[in-house]
Amino acid sequence: MKDTASLCTIVAALIVTVVFVAAITMPGGINANGLSIFLEDGVFNLFGVFDAVALFTSTTSLPMFLSIFTPSYGE
Image (cartoon, rainbow, N blue to C red; front, side, top):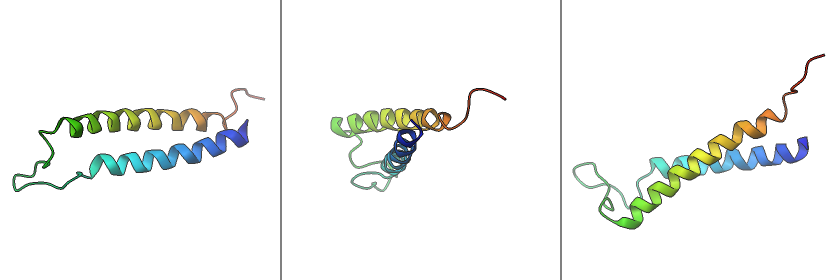
């Protein structure tokens, strides 16, 4: 169980890193006003929603996998 949790923790950490970078980087760049070029595009808004969901779920799964390593009982 701990081996599986260890591997899943590594994968979850990589997913959190990639999704966070995708969330703070503007695809397509920004215009002179500091807004995204694709702000009016529906697919860009859909990307933002799915990126937020992925960031939330992967950030939530990381402590869950890490909690497997801590014992839930005392001596």
